[in-house]
Length: 259
Image (tube, rainbow, N blue to C red; front, top):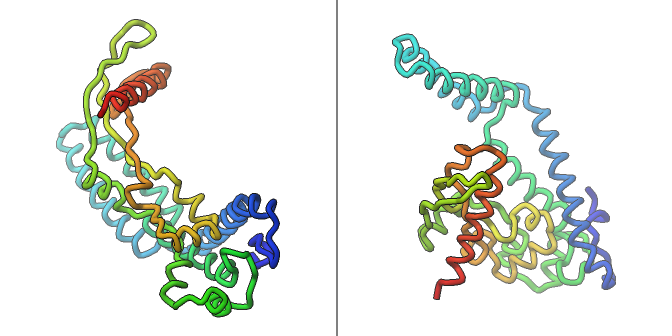
């Protein structure tokens, strides 16, 4: 991916300003996928994390087989064993864990930022020969440059951060279904990013400006709690959408009544 593909130029027209974020997003997403696929193909043996996880899975298998042999919750433990076997097959096929993949995605995202965007001014779009020239152009310190060019990543603790500050609502509610039956629904809340991490981090020029403005995609102003049915799988599929809609309407009604 060359700097010519970043969408920047010496002169920025109004149309370019409008179209550039969408173009940047598509190009960066494409390059991320290419590099991740290349990394996956390069794996000929299990990663260290995958080996450790495989050992853990095999230990769990032995425990479950022993319980089944002695007649302990045979049906339930057999289901657990079957799921474990599926995980082991996938792990042996993929050769990496979820944490390995997350680490690679973060590394690749920062590589693309440094290679394809570091020499571009996020304000005027002018392409320079190096990030050092951008630093001089903007009269920035090393710390300011590092902050500006830091890729936005999903904080694994963003949910805990929200719950610690805001708490979380859980309650039971009755939902009348189309057949007249009453569904006893257990409602919880899931924490989500308002501005999604991947599109934001893949639109490099926008995220660099966000960094300079002090926007943190994992902070509370960009997090929200959305209601969901914790026991939704207990109900037939044709009723699940009705249940979820009722939960949302109930949540909105509560919000309107709140002072």
